[in-house]
Length: 191
Image (tube, rainbow, N blue to C red):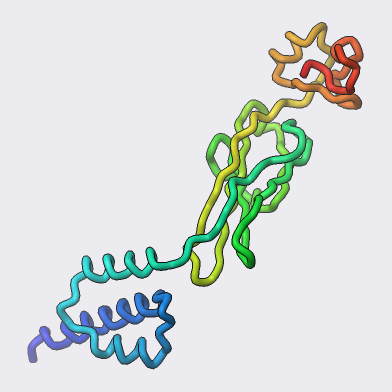
């Protein structure tokens, strides 16, 4: 018995599955019966390149989400919570968040808020917001980065020393705040 027939059947089955997958991605909304009929009629001479290009064309046909670049609010300092403001997206879009330290994902930091830790001091913090919605291509936007200041741990002779320590600005009530460092007496020293 020749081994060619089982190989052709296996190849035909793989092609049928791939074609059904491509049809299921189609924005034309092929029904299960249509997908099965198309898969059964799939030619055995379809190449991988043809499947890849067909899949790319179907993916390109998806609608584009309306999205905004997220913004960060809150103090850029260790221990101070920062909130991601995603901006405007297509109605019904599901948003997910990933906080980044110097462009690399921070493990477990996937909520709209993040409180910087000691490892963030002196690093650029940003957030990547990804939107998904059925019938639309997923879209990701990343906020501008903010350098995170360390927490003041002592007293500083002047603002130059506080800047060198990387703890500025220092807010009233935080360690290291001194009225002599707050020239305009607005509660923010060495701004």
